[in-house]
Structures are given as structure tokens and as C-alpha cells.
Image: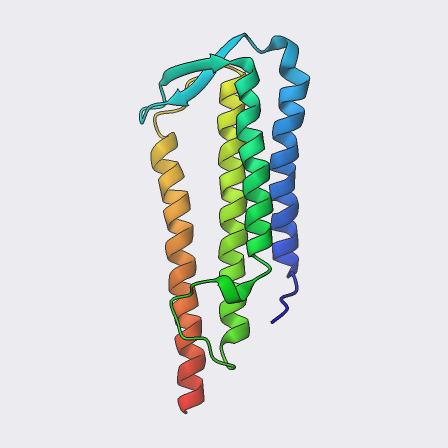
Length: 163
């Protein structure tokens, strides 16, 4: 099944790319001001607990590029997705759309978090103590929302077929 991008999905893809490009531009424009030692890891309270070289600020954007590429490729192969409902002709389109939305939302959220972490690394700032709880709520909230939505869509189409 060939899935076309919806307007929402296209907007999210552009936002994801902006986060990715923004990280690189930010590092480039700040390069001369970045100190030789920058934070490379934060503990659960947002405190800096490991330092590294300024060249390590390129690691997060590199991982972001790899993740963006991998997740984008995976989004084009719905037959690879493991969904929580049985796929039928009636629900295939709705379930695939919902699952692709999950994939794209997660990609953008991860890139937004990478951007936030990159900003704090380049500016040598600790994270807020509420960063970890908010991060977990966003990621798991998105997962739960779309899993429940996909199950409902799959069962709704199944129920309609039985009537």
C-alpha cells in the first residue's frame, strides 16, 4: 500500500527538518563562542555530570540525521510495522495513517528534544529539573495516544464490517 503524506504529516516533516537544520546552524554560528569543555551528559535532575570537547557537540546532530533518515525510510514501509490490531481491507488505510502519524510525531518530538539538549550543551547550561518528567510525558503520552487510537480505528472498522 502506497501512503501519501497528509498536510499535517508534511508540516510535521518540515518542522522536524527545521529542528535538525537549526541544530547545525546554531552550532555553526556559535562555534567561536563554544568553550573547549561542554556538558555531554545530564543526570535525572538536569545537572551536568560529564564533560567533553566542543567537537562532541556534533554528535547529537549526527545522531539526529541518522534517526531522521532511518525513521523516514521506515515510514514508507507499512508492511514492516507491528500494529496492535489485525489489518483488514476495511481498516488498512485508517490504521496505516494513524501509525504513520505516530512515527512522524515521535520523530519530530525526538528532534525537538535533541535541539533543546543541543542548545543547553552549546550554551553550557544545566537542564531544568522538570526536563525529564516533561520529556517522559511527551514521549509516552504520544505513544499511548496513538496506540489507543490505532486500536480503536482497527476495531471500529472491524465492528462496521460485522454489521
